Length: 269
Image 1 (cartoon, rainbow, N blue to C red):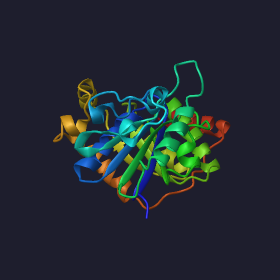
Image 2 (cartoon, rainbow, N blue to C red):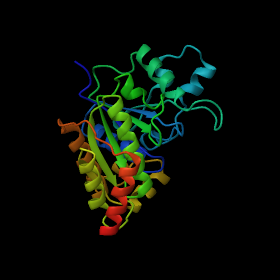
Image 3 (cartoon, helix red, strand yellow):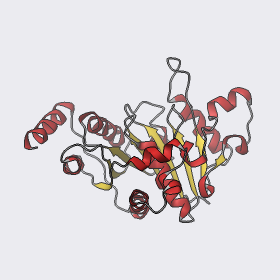
């Protein structure tokens, strides 16, 4: 028996992936689920809103302490969420994916990911699926993948590229989370894209100023505005992901096909 859900959430930088991960994790914890979030982004900002501060990263911790304990690298946040940040090298130095590899091996060695957990969420940078960032999938730490995207060209282009990585690694795809940027016909565009690559839209998160207001105070929307419509959207998304049993193998487009697909959508709009 392993964790009920072990899910990697990918998406291009700046798409709102970390915000989405933190809020659904908060929704799970609020619901009494034993939840763990592993930040696999060199920016190391996934868990800030869950813990109210930026956490020290595993890469930085092991520079100071070569033999850390689980308590040195694992922190507790909102409603008992377990939080870890892998971290990355200084900009321009070394491989950013290395932090993910080091973090996962150390967590495994110290028994950080265990069978008591109901949900483990990996927040993974996904502009490129390089060796390090593919670790949650390649090493089978995650059972399924979800991609956060908007209806914008670069966001969908990245989602298509991530799908190529998922297919190559024989991963299973839960679907696309549409994190709206407010462009015309956005939900329709993302739905058509999902259908085209043999997956589905598993949730729609509207654009809302409550997200920024919460993040200024280093809190999730779930914690800061628990009765808001936006908090309900995150709860509904979390529930949909947790209950999902139907995953697919994505069928991504090649670059020329993607270009034609997006141009055709634009003409129809």
